[in-house]
Amino acid sequence: MSTTHPALVRDRDGLAAALAAQDAATLPRPESDTGRRRYRRAVVMTMGALHEGHLALVEHARSLAEVVVVTIFVNPLQFGPTEDLARYPRDLERDLRLLSGPGLLRPQDVVFAPTVDVVYPDGDPTVRVTAGRVGDVLEGASRPGHLDGVLTVVLKLMHLTQPDVAVFGQKDAQQVVAVRRMVEDLDVPVVVAVHPTVREPDGLARSSRNAYLTADERERALGLSAALSAGRRAADGGQGADEVVAAARAVLDERLSDDDAVDYVALVDAGTFAPADARTDEALLLLAARVGSTRLIDNAPLTLRTGLAGAGRGSDATGRTTGGAA
Ligand SMILES: Nc1ncnc2c1ncn2[C@@H]1O[C@H](COP(=O)(O)OP(=O)(O)OP(=O)(O)O)[C@@H](O)[C@H]1O
Ligand SMILES: CC(C)(CO)[C@@H](O)C(=O)[O-]
Ligand code: BAL
Image 1 (tube, rainbow, N blue to C red):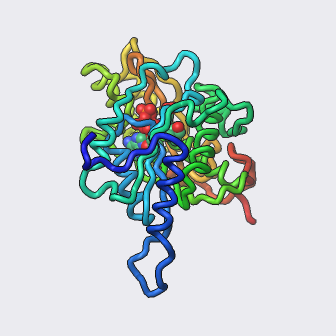
Image 2 (image 1 turned 60 degrees about the vertical axis):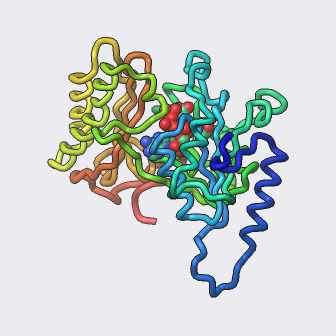
């Protein structure tokens, strides 16, 4: 392996030693040292097959913290029995090469790429984290148990890598909501930071699964970002939630073929993830579709001008009380 690669650790002892070295290198400095970043250690969790989206998360982590840990682990627990666990792209050499690019990992930063038996030494864990009602809708409804599997490994990786801040991508919007909820509900002492979705120049959200797409499928996949733009235009034009969803769905119907299938088009309150209604102003338009055999997701924030924010109270998809006067 080339010496320009960042430090790679593959087991728990190696990780503990690397974290101890990071801690020694980041002992508190005098208050007068104004060059200090806000956090000591940031973690970026990935499943590898890295792309510009992941690298943007790493850059962001680096701007937030003195040292960074990137994890690369394809977590079997979050894949359903008919999903793509076996064919999910894995290329550690390539990932390490990308992470050694300029402005990314520094000598004291670490890549933790454990095998399944390192993360789950006793096999599938008996005790797991449940996403509760966040895990029942949208991604959770389409991929039963997916968000439980995500949260279980995220909590384990937080324990193992001991970050002060963990950086996630907005592309997986529901994952962000679930992780934030877990951190709050289980008093996990980690700050959750979110980076906006990074796109290809033509609008396609970067995703490791884009590698599965044929040229024709990739063209049809542009329907997702086009649908989000149509939804945003409808909102900008003063349309309500139903019209925004209809505008997005019409574009998907037009751009996808009989070989594809729309999974969901949903508009939720950006703050609570509850379905958007007349009280919603800041909303998130969420899409999932299968293009050929590849399932893709995307989302975009938008502002509903029909929103009557503050009216009434309710309970959101995450269990928090919403709306109305405090
Ligand atoms: N285009 C993107 N922009 C910003 N963040 C991203 C993007 N793609 C992935 N991420 C974030 O990177 C982290 C690791 O994601 P992951 O390794 O699953 O990549 P992915 O491209 O989403 O893969 P997949 O194709 O399996 O969905 C997650 O926090 C995810 O939200
Ligand atoms: C957060 C994560 C690394 C957990 O396996 C995964 O869900 C992902 O890559 O988004
Ligand atoms: N980025 C989400 C990981 C998954 O689809 O399993």
